[in-house]
Image (tube, rainbow, N blue to C red):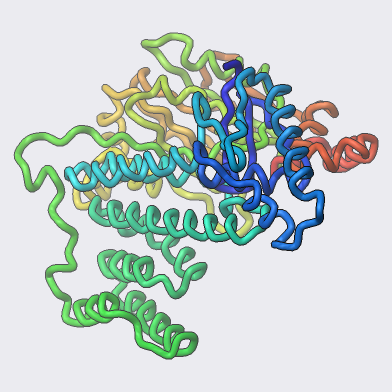
Length: 478
C-alpha cells in the first residue's frame, strides 16, 4: 500500500506521510476531507458534502466540484507515496479508507479507554501515564480552521472528551498525592472554563490538601458569583458539599491511602513520562541530532549532553526532538524540568524544588521526601541507581543548578540546555556538547513554510527569505 498516512484532527486538520506534511489545498478540499475524517471507514453522501461546503445553497455544478476536489485529494495522496486508494467511491458518496493508516482521534480514544481500565484496576500511575499520552495528541482546537455545522458539532464533542480526560487525569493525580503540583495548571483551567464544576471541584480539593484552605474557600465564592451572575443559579451539589466538608475539616477529604499502604505487596516503580510536547514544525539540525545519538550508543552506559546557544535559537526544540526519538532507550521513564534560568518574570528554580517533584514522580510519597538537601539528593540518586531514566533539564543558568540533579550512576542520561557554555559540566561523549548557530536560509524558509503553509510561501519565496533573515534565522522557533 506504500506510505502510511497519519490523519490529524485534534488541532488544525493535517495529514502527514512519514515525516512529510501533505498539502491539503484550498478550503473546499479541506472541508471534504474533514467530513470524511468525521467517520473514517463509513460512507459520507455527496449531498452531505454539498450542504457542508456551500451552506445548503449550492451552485448547479456543486456535485461536479465535489468530485473534482476528491480527485485532487486522491492525487495528493498518490504523490505522497500511497499506492492504495485512500478515498473510495461508495454509493451514495465516498468513504475514507482506514486500512493501514493512523487517526489521532482513534488513538486518543484508545489511550483513554486503556487509562480508564487501569484506573478501575487500581493502577493509578499507569492510568496517569495513559491519560497524559492521550492529551499530548492534541495540538489545538479540533478541526481548527475548518467550518461547517457537522464539523463544528464533532469538534465540540471531541473537546468535551478532551476536558473529561483532563478531569480524569487530575483525579488520578489527586489519588497519587500530587495536589500541590496540580494547583497552577488547575487554576489556569478554571479561568479558561469557569463554569466547569468538576474542574473547579478538583482545584478546591487540591488547594485544601495543600494547606490552602482560604484559597479553596475563595475558589468556591468565585464559582458562586459567576454561576449566579451568568446562569442565575447556585453551584451544583458536589461543589456545595465540598465547601461544607472543607468548613468542618471533614476527615474524608484527606488523601486516600496509597496502593502500598493498602496492600503489603510491593508496588511497581513509578514510570514518569514528563516530556513536554514535541516541536511540530522542527526543521534541520540533522548533524546535531546525530551527535546526541552518541549519548545512547552504548546500551549499558549513558552520557551527559549540553546544548548551548542564543535565546530563540532552538535549544529546547532540539532537546525535545532528540528526547522523543530516544525515549525507547529509557524504559524506566523520562523526567523533565524547566529551570527558568533566564526567565525575566521569575527567579530560577532551585534544585531543591526540582528534586521534590522528581522524587514524587519516581513514586516517593510526599511525607517521605527529606527536608535536608543532601538527604534529598542521596535518595534521588539511590532511586536512579538501578533504573534507566532520561533527565532533560531545560534553561539551566549555572552548573550549581544542575549538579544536584545529575544521577550518580551511568545507566541514566542527562540532556541540559543553556545559553552559557558551563565549562564545569563534563559532557560525555564529547560531541554531545553542542553549540547551536542559526539555521541555514533554506532550513529557515522550510521552517517558515511548515508554520504558515506552502500556499502562502510559494508565490513569495524572495519575501520569505528576506523575512527569515530579519529574524536572524532563529526566532521562528518561538
